[in-house]
Length: 117
Length: 109
Image (tube, rainbow over all chains, first blue to last red; front, side, top):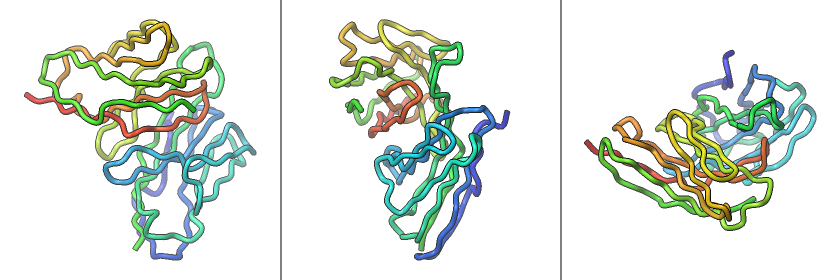
């Protein structure tokens, strides 16, 4: 299993540009989410999904769109990049119900470091 | 979602036991308590999870009192490589998790 993969690892955008951060998991997890982490801060939830076709907003959804057309993929779209969106973005996934275990562990990807100038 | 409160930072020395306490007064009946560890430039990594009483795995123990309004992560005999940020999270199974500021643990030689 590759786990949770994110691409690209690094990205520089100019203000106003749009782009899509990719996230994929091969563990058949129902639940997927996106976080952003600013320097020296904790992670903040942007959007999450409890299954294909279902998405919902987290703490800081403005400026971002998501869709979940398959179980495996959960892309995050920046509509019009702003310097305030300079951050490290983490994608995570987990089961949303018991699978013979009492552990609900979220697996995190390696992150995408985004700079908006 | 239940709000969590934990110390901003802690210092320890190699070989000592470290206990990090997290307060979660508004925990709901179906919430689990989960701890994650994060190293710089990496995504958080699951450490341990529990619902009540005590849970132990190969790296840590989690103590949860009967009222579940707090929990304590115990790291036995820490080493320099345990220097990291530790997050306490409370939430429903497989549901959205809200991270707080975390506790920065500095282990000294």
